[in-house]
Amino acid sequence: MDSAAAVSFDANGTIGAYQIGVLISCVLLGVMTTQTYIYYSRFPEDPPILKVLVAFVWVCEVAHAICIAHALYHFTIVDFGHPERLFSRLPVSLDTAIFFSALIEQSGSVVTFIVTLRLPSLQSYIAHWSWLSISQWSASAVNDILTTATLVVLLYNQRRSAQRKTVALVDKIIVWTIETGMLTSALAIFMIIFYLTMKERMIWLGAYVISSRLYSNSLLASLNSRGALRSMNNMEVSLQSLAVRPEIEILQTTTTNAVVDITAKFPRDI
Image 1 (tube, rainbow, N blue to C red):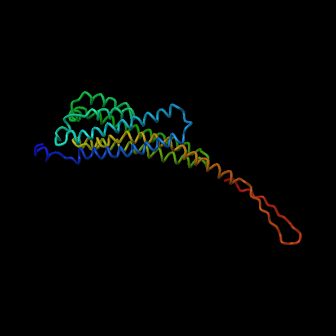
Image 2 (cartoon, rainbow, N blue to C red; image 1 turned 90 degrees about the vertical axis):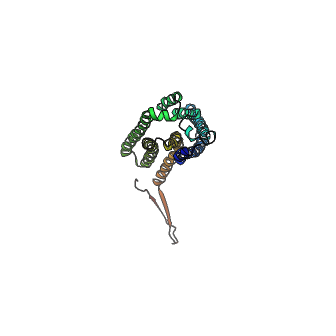
């Protein structure tokens, strides 16, 4: 590696950013694995198609993690001392990781996968196909925002006509919908900003390898949250049944004639 290349090469903004993304992605894979175990433990009677879907997503995420880890090994070990190769050729494992992301996220990534297979380097993709990634991430952000807004409006309308015991459940679902939808859309906007402002760095790529984990974890979180919602509903029903149960007071006087006063109290409707 010559001195000019060493001076111009920014390891923190390229390999460092990608490595941080890979590490965060692996942590999220561990979270998803835990959620997968919880799902199969708590919902053994779910439809088979749903169980197959969860297993399929988990297998795709594991394969995606293997691919991005191999690409990191390629960048840091195989091409060690040759930073000019970072953008001169694209590892096959990174192409495969894009493919698994397409299976988990959306079909737009399939086009990106096909294009990257035909290009000789990452630099060629940035120079001629930047619009493809920007369009994909923009569509993803808009789709997540619109989906979240639609669900929130529908749930809020249901909340206005719901019984008092179901209002807390609807509020909880609204909060979860906003959290998951805004998280994925915010990451897509984050990738667009860094891709437009710092193309030659790999901050956007580090964020990209995390995106599929957010979708899969959101899916598992939605499935597993059904247990908490059912518990809240059962608690509301139990409290309501206790509230309408009559209370009986037995008062006994201290006189020689045992007089028993029985009073039944029925609380008002709550």
